[in-house]
Image (cartoon, rainbow, N blue to C red; front, side, top):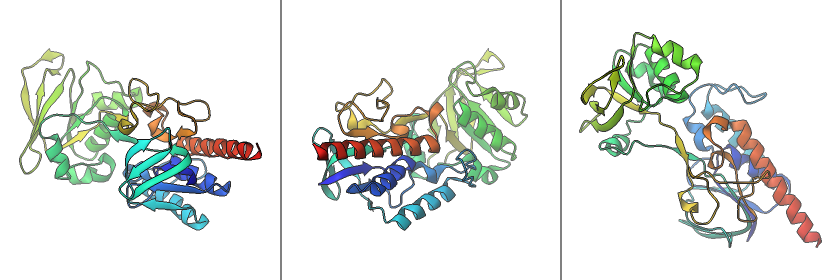
Length: 311
């Protein structure tokens, strides 16, 4: 029996672990991957907004955070995936057996939303999943499709185009919803074609991506029949969704699956807390925010534990 079990080793989970360890709580962090870091492994652009610690990318920040955990001797286990939660009883069924605690901190993060069209799963299985910042030079002189209309999609399309990539930006609404600072240069970039009111219905290609089928699109405001758009890669940038599917029916979730919490990060189940992207929508998501939430959860648990011990 642990005082606290933390599930997930992203920035929020790491912060929770450091604070629980510092506060003398018997704690264990469980991470399904082989290394701690969570979504930091997929951040390929510079992190300039973490106070006092500018780094070239998420991988560098991951290394620094992990070194901090190791230096302090904080207890964690990697390669442990939770298969079933019993939040009322604070029991976790995992591929490494059952774990129990008095309190839980859930740092399950978010996952990329998928198109759910034919050919997408095969593309992912072939590992044709790319980063605009990391792989921009690989596609110089080639054609790619970027799906989405938010900041991540539009910024990625611009970055690729500025490195010699011919980009087709496909968005299901009639206008891009990204910030103006990204939209304005994209609208006038000679390397970018924009298809609005457009839906990708299939990703084509047996051994590699060869193109996408697009329905209902407009070009320069004129409707066109469904057509095949040749492309060497597809960048799906249609947002994220919280990794809360195993929590449904046990916690109070909003309509999009984000966990509802109080000011301390506590969920609708007492002594179960949520931190990071599991509770925070993308517009407010940040490493600094997740770290702060982890600290708040840990201190709340410690204060409550000390108070109950005194009673």
